[in-house]
Image (cartoon, rainbow, N blue to C red):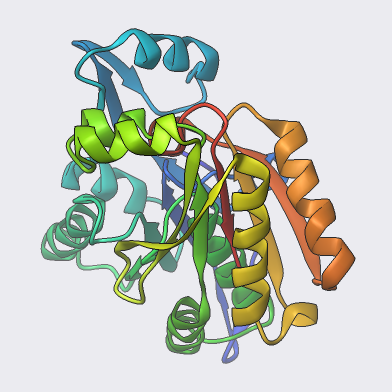
Length: 294
């Protein structure tokens, strides 16, 4: 269990806070060491081989297994009991950020864990579960925004309200090098995947306001698809200078760096961060995939 060693004042009292993120949300090293963040792990499975999505996750070994697999990888969400364990501790305010409720059972599991915790405990701990309506570094940005408002001295209710507004303003994008995982797990027909791969068509995907996946565009070749993704993002982001943009990549740091450079040529963001995908994001992005959230 992480020890929280910093406090802030709210309304004359001293409050401690914790931010719980499911493992689809990649945390930069500084947040892992921060003391306020805790990760609840999902589990991956490739042909019967089970992999916990935690600090032991080996991306290259996972990608090798996925490439050889006929049926493709699967994931399972954390149990309500895992979330209940994460809610323990001295924090007065517990904020939870999960993978989109439209894509995973993680959100429902976190809410059930909250309800069970509150039934069993009589303390005054406040818990709120955010449906990120995103994934990967979208969750990361939400966690960072929670911390920003907590450190600014906002009350629990103010943090919840401001972060829910922030989630509604967010957009998530991704471009995949290969559509094999989507084909193997039934999210894309064999014919569509064959045509796309044969013609080197790369779909530009995004998230709806409900947190579902939609296709925004497509292009021949990865570079053109990434350019379309950047163009779409810039057209929808009105206050770049006040926002942090995050890029996660699956085993392709140079590609992520190139995307960052494309963006910097046409827009000025408050900050741009790049992170390598963890387990669940690696499963969906697959080798060479790039995810972007703002």
